[in-house]
Image (cartoon, rainbow, N blue to C red):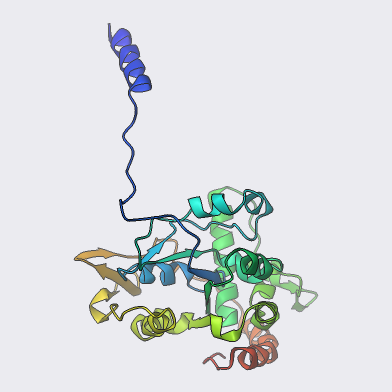
Length: 284
């Protein structure tokens, strides 16, 4: 009898249409007005979550990878638009894909598809970003039960830095920014200080509001410091939320001499980046 009842329920569920969430009557899907182009492990997730605090911002839930993955790009603009949230008139649509910043073909593709897009780039001190990059890959491989490699194995070769290590190259910001500035004017790219965003998010978010010409809304009441996690969490309409537990992971311990090699190596590239960016950052 139980098997008969179970089969009947399965049949009913298969023929009764499931309820769908209707789009807002005054909302539409459209190309993003704002694209967070990177940098990987620079704080892009924190940035987009903080932008969501503003009532005139709607954001794509996931990284779309439209411009850097050929398999997605070949699906066309209609598919890209379908990945966006519904936006009301006056709202800005935002998407983030950190891999855009270091992908050579992305700037031209964005220009062809959405020439009016405003771009946000969030950066961190290059060595800290590299360590976060390694830590993420380490935990991803751990979850998939793949063989692990120590940071020293990947980073060092015959006592010197391995310049082919991808995480190292992602921190050479000037190389990638120059490619973007060949396509977009400097006025269309706003740089966010990822280290400052972690320490004190409000001043950085006010600068973002101004760049995006948003009505000032984000304020000190939207942030509270979580002593347990060790970073700021968000408060919105009496709802409190923190970033995923994967954020803020402890970095591996690195020998002081290796850290010094990294600081020395990045010193000149950082100066080149500052010149391109038209500003400096408080980096080692």
